[in-house]
Length: 111
Image 1: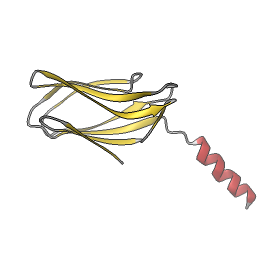
Image 2 (image 1 turned 90 degrees about the vertical axis):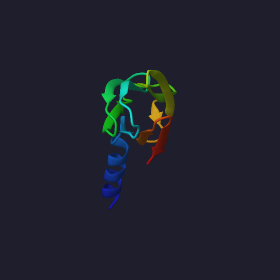
Image 3 (image 1 turned 30 degrees about the vertical axis):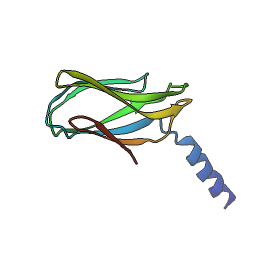
């Protein structure tokens, strides 16, 4: 029984998740251009059509500092940005986020 307990402890601490999953839904009626999603170390740039969904993974493997994740995008020729996901010493507060881009705001949910 002791060996089984040690095995579970080993598995628990050896499984270190270095990525967060971000699901993004463009719920606006417009195409969103030049989206940048970043934690300051890992950058993803892409486009989204109206009513499109996508999943992005941000890597935290080599992050050793504190910071915020953010999303910047151009909608109706206007640059918009929102910060989310605080991390401390490279460890994010949550590992799953759901961002819903509306016509005038971004709704942020974490799971």
